Length: 168
Image 1: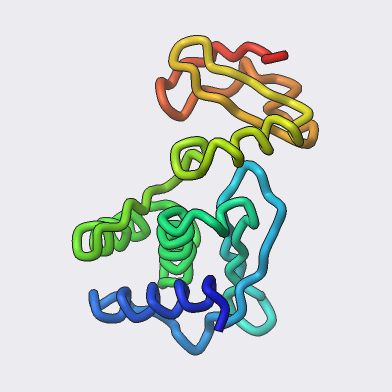
Image 2: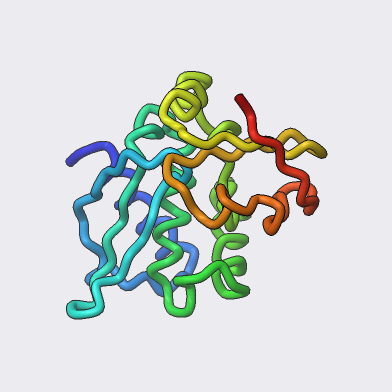
């Protein structure tokens, strides 16, 4: 069993022990990996089979705390009513955070949970780099998007302001 699959099985067991309705038979046991720079993981549901696939960014494989939190975050998405980050998701996140010491939240900041090497890799690969003038939050993007074309339309997730500058 790979380390990431061990982390998933541990997260499943902890969620079950906390009384969460984990659909164990609908979760793919093998984790996929991505080269994502702006997200730590994803959980997708196959519409045909109803099975969930968890994908983890390769950039956090060496960071056990980030791996555990991301795995639990994605596992919560498999629970009924939790494919979004609504009230049900937050309630389940609070339960595992309180019971097991996780820090699962709606979003995670890569620069907070991973090494300086990861941050350097983000900068190296990113074609777009924005900094909030108010609080210093950094956003990296590889591809053009609505945000990269019109950052003035978007608010910072930390301070709520819309004062982005393009970093060199």
